[in-house]
Length: 309
Image (cartoon, rainbow, N blue to C red; front, side, top):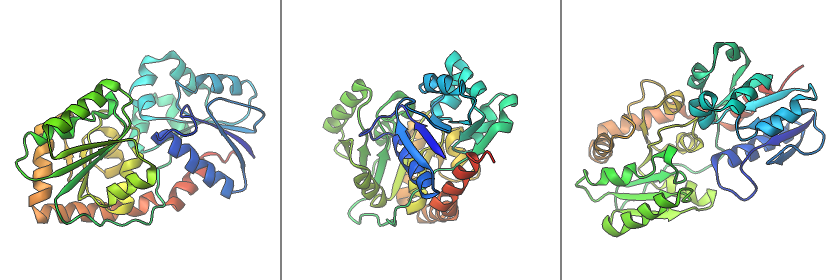
């Protein structure tokens, strides 16, 4: 088929949505489809695959007039905010013939009438990197752009409650300039904290593989690609207990802390650094989840979601 893949994240951006769009385009092309990736609907297509209910609404509305198959992939802000607050997002749900969510708990947030349209496509990583943490200090990485939904400064705040020579490496563009300023000031007052800004994907994966643990402190996630990358590499994850993280890691995963609670996060960081038995248990749980984030599994789920035969 000729497939239009629309994402609001443009060429050259380093957002999770852009990485998802390019990875999906590669899977679809490998299956024999012709795929055009753009930020808005262009030209003629036999199927539209759109990321983001609200931000891609105009393309969804226009393509719906053709009567051809329309598949909508829901982001975290769609699932946990926009479908409640945005008329455009709710209309996109109505217009889509199928809906993709990135982890199974996301379907629970949708109105009942739409749940029969849902396909779960867990994101994957093809990296061959394996967990190889540095020896000099216990390194914790935080990977995610600096915006409110990510609660990106929570790990820096947690350091105030940890009396150990940890190293925190923070990667991500300052999408909120005020948070960027906070990160700069944080480096001045906390020598254990380094913010490196936006880096190439390959470099980010290198930092992830060299870290003892990764923190994802988000208030809202649809199913974070970086969690899937940590699972693929084998890095223990310290995660806020929100549906998007629980949907990927499972309700019984041992590395959760309450969202927004830096003292609890500090306790998890301290325990990971000092309790070898607990740390090994996290490693074991992460290893068990690795097959779920294999590219083969993601490709098969995506192809099933667009199959209207």
